[in-house]
Length: 303
Image 1 (spheres, rainbow, N blue to C red):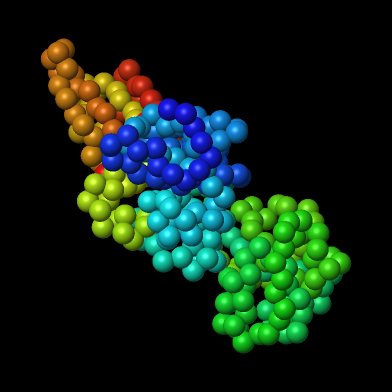
Image 2 (spheres, rainbow, N blue to C red):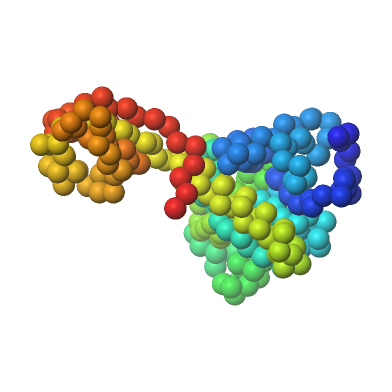
């Protein structure tokens, strides 16, 4: 199928779901998560419509800031974007679910109110009559109104961190680790919003039985892929005389799959555990008589 840069659906008589993914800093992480969910997406730098190995999907790459508006107005059936942009745009959409992943860490992104280290400003109350630069003008105005503070809020097109030292009194900026803010000698006064990626749907699309089922399937697989990232599978063999003591002594093995081996008196144990405890768990398994211990990665964990 020939790609184009428009929003029109390539109608071939089949059901299609138009799915918006964030272009830019979150693009690589989102496509990686979608791949783990079972959807291979290949991006052509010259097009906003990448290839996806699902004939029922049409992917659009759009700035995260705009996705919720396009979903609200029905140009997209669903999309992944941050809670921050849903709230900034005031978009009326159906929230299918929250999905914790980010471009740098597993920490959620935060919009924080910052001032230069040397600034006398200590709290939001000190911003009365001051100037603030930010990309999230509406969120910032709502925050100031909540605290009964009147200040001038101007939109920042970029390099917001630099402006705090010369052009404005404070900024509201997005951070995950805070390292960039520290590098620019900025001090965090308060957190305005903690934002995580959300899968959202157009309200009318959500009422459509076929589209809703397709969106729910994507959500299920994506959630399973994210859940699997922190877990591994582990299997082992154990003699019958050690079986109960091994299971009862190790909380991580409360619900294992146990099957009898062809060799009489021996059993195979298979279970899923948090990856972070593996290095402590394996030596204990050996102490309790486990043999042939195998650790293996997981693609999805669906509860």
